Length: 192
Ligand code: RP5
Image (cartoon, rainbow, N blue to C red; front, side, top):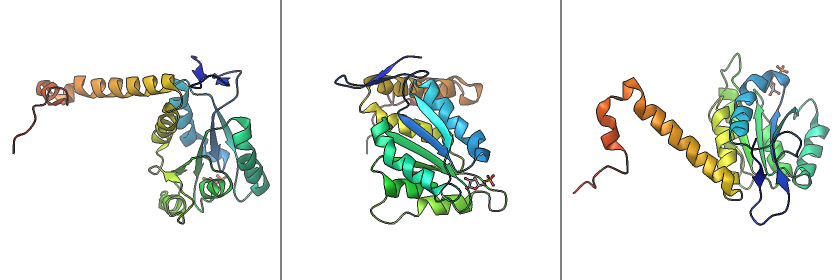
C-alpha cells in the first residue's frame, strides 16, 4: 500500500509495519462489523490505522490512557463507534485535542437513536463530528478529508474516490443517457 508522507517531511506512515495515524475504536467487539467499513475505506485510501476495543464503561482507564497517549503515538484522527449509552466518543473528545468522529452504532431496541443522541448532543466546547447511525464509511472518508490538508497524496486519493463514485453513478443504467449533460462542468449558468 502506498505511503502516506507528511508535507514537510518528518514521520512517514504506511499500512502494515508503520504506525497508525487513525485510531478506530469500538465500545465492544460487537461493534466491529460496522467499524470495519471505516477501516476498509481507510485502507482503500492508503491510510494506516488501528482497530481496537476501548469501552467508556467497561475499561474507563484504558479510554483515558488511549486518549492521553494518542497524540504522542502519532494518531491524528480518532473514529469512535459506540451503541446505547454511547459515551466513548464524547469522553475521548474530553481527554484529547485530536478530532473525534463519532459513529452511532445501531442497537436492538432503539435502532441506534439512543446512540445517535448520546453522541451528537455534546456540550459547547467539546465537539464530536457525528456521522449517521451506522455511517462508518462516511467516518472513514471524513477522517481522510481531515488528513488531506496535511497529506497531499491523501487529497489526491479522496478526489479520485469522488470522481470514481460520480462516474459510477452517471454510467449506471438507472442514470439514463441525458444525465451527463447535467454535470457541473457542462451545465450552463442559469439566467434569472
Ligand atoms: C456499547 O454497548 C458498545 O459500543 C456496544 O455497541 C454496546 C453493546 O455491547 P456488547 O454488550 O455487545 O458488548 O458499549
